[in-house]
Length: 348
Ligand code: ADP
Ligand code: MG
Ligand code: MG
Image (cartoon, rainbow, N blue to C red; front, top):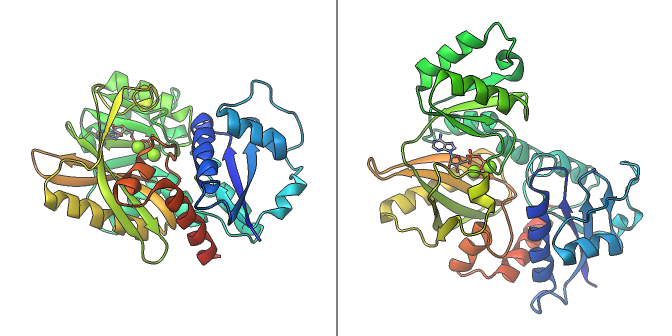
């Protein structure tokens, strides 16, 4: 009997469209000749309004690769009855309400296995302040940072001047201001003055209650490593992303042709070994499972490797870094997807 895989995609985040394309690639891999005898795909689409769709409606979105222009209205708590047939879930949702432990909690509550990290790893990996304090406790080298809350930095806050001077003396300029819980560089600014700092704090506060400010790494090279496994996770070879813009912002990420991937990255062998060891340490420190992409900054001048962040449900299209890193490491896309489902079943 075929194993019924609930492919959960779309979602209420800014990365809705990427999720649809990731899910399309994963569905194709589950139907690949190597896998088709063992897996049946049940697409489950979460519309931007949060309503869940199954059956033909979900299959149409998957096949089209883009969100429908008209969304079905309905009740958020009408859980589609055909979801009861699902044996294992494969959530491929990026960002808040998908990668942050919320969906993982729901699936755990259903007592069904799912691909990827559980509640703790997902939540810890999504919140950049929680993530960085866990990295610090694990002794991983990273940039200096500070955390503030929305109420401290809104324009009528009495505390704002003091908050700004604390940031200036701790981190200096330039620095990065980010919503703590987001991805795809949404809400992130690089700032060089007090005026830019207050604007950026206000902007970040429009996305999240929690805000992180980080010292800027000067001209970093952006290095990524893929991790796969549960108790004995493995690392892929290491990749690099290069681009012409000031930093890896939203447009650079999503406008085709703006960024180049180099696999494997042209780095000194010792730096590659450090990246791979650090990726495993981060995976374990955050209690991640199944998969994660761990991102680093490499400073050529000082030969330093700094950890930047983890992504517990990284982009998974045919041209995404995570599957490309595994392909270059000898694990083709269909086998990678098969392995992820098996890892989900092993964890139960
Ligand atoms: P996201 O989760 O949205 O990808 P990141 O923290 O990875 O957010 O930041 C997005 C990009 O911004 C990075 O890939 C990098 O180009 C730039 N960046 C972020 N923080 C720093 C930093 N401290 N120093 C230098 N560049 C940074
Ligand atoms: Mg991220
Ligand atoms: Mg990033």
